[in-house]
Length: 196
Picture (cartoon, rainbow, N blue to C red):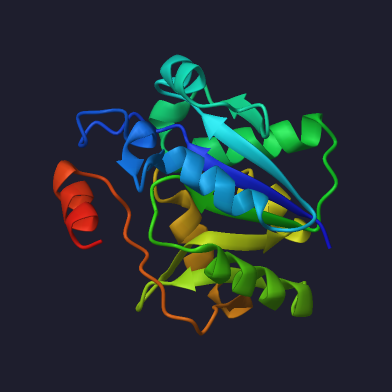
């Protein structure tokens, strides 16, 4: 079972007032931490989707160990990054059974949780494995290859969430509890750092 992992890191993070992907947590940037975690998953190809601040990010972070693509339409929201990533995978003819979509701004998620998601997917290859946010599902999520053409039709910033809502009968979530905090504002970042 092969995975194509998309790390979405294209947003301009206007609420943060800084380049969010380069914020430091435990001596490493948010994006480097996300890449490092993904690379620990076996039989996977890691693709980083950049957009806003791509030049600064490439100057600061060594991306030699992963593939990356630029989403020129990043202002159209998260969906545009998913689509840019899928198009890159198709163009490069990367072989995969599951598309694992992750965010670069969820530092509290540990490798063990991703591994649990992968283990679940390896048993249930026709199901979407998605994080459970209580009353709804969201990313990180693993989509079977059969869903790719439908994912190419999503739009806006909530496209993936709406897609998951529409397909909830096909979703399984890991049982482990996990902190799914997205770091979107300076307050989020400071709260997360101070609780460590």
